[in-house]
Length: 368
Image (cartoon, rainbow, N blue to C red):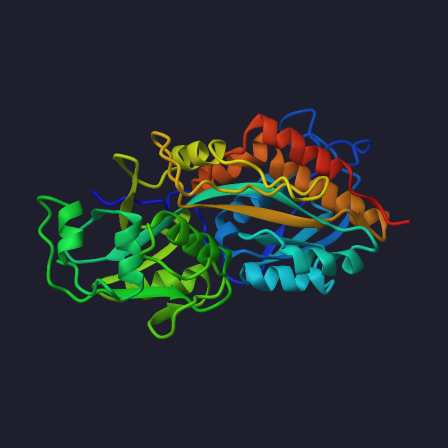
């Protein structure tokens, strides 16, 4: 039976219109102290963001959660991809960005000017498996080690009945169909996380560095998550990688973790996240997870992306401060995390991580 992660996830086309929620006119961060739709909000205005297409289903769920509570606030989010979102944030086109790859050192330096002399923070609020998806007549699921996946995407393994695939899938009748790997054509945090996994877990089968731009020449490609999925769906023998929430009816690969074969799941993503340390080189309030791609923790699925919302530590108007704080507070809240879990199959962040994320949000201030 094929795995289907489309349940409850509404695909976005273009810009997402989100209604931002805040609870109580005396609560600047918008943190809800009541339940139901009888709360009131003094917030109004517009808040613009753009970025990771992996967050599409989560953003749709967050919009639905806010719509009835704050009719006077509109948040727009353009799912242009992680690279496009970071660029728009750093040039001041949007107030926040979604990205599957945290800001690098050069971007952090640029953020000091963009953020009115302060800086930017990366807040991990969306944790999801990356699924290796395929379309192969008669086959719904397969096991593959990181080395086998790497050899497929470097065109070392070129047919589905290759001995390496067969050895990892005893009893499965594999056709001699040619393999067509599909990668992202745009700069992508999903690509960076996928190539990071291959670089660290494949035992040298993947020799390229982790990169948001696909590092190899040639091959079939698709723009953004939707374009890659469409390309995989459109052929027979195709294989690609995407946020698990978009896998739909495609075949899905279980990866090797220690002596186990582990399918992508929110539970496996959460286990891998808990087994991973934070990057202690980041500044105060900037929370970046250093994912342990080689974990052998039972049940862990380390081919994950930790997707961030990026915001300034200071804005030049109090309205922007209030809107950003309120939006991010909802996203990080138990309610917001539950909404994205239901819609996108993401793993809710832990209470400990939520406490630290909220402290970063609370520290956002008016630029002096």
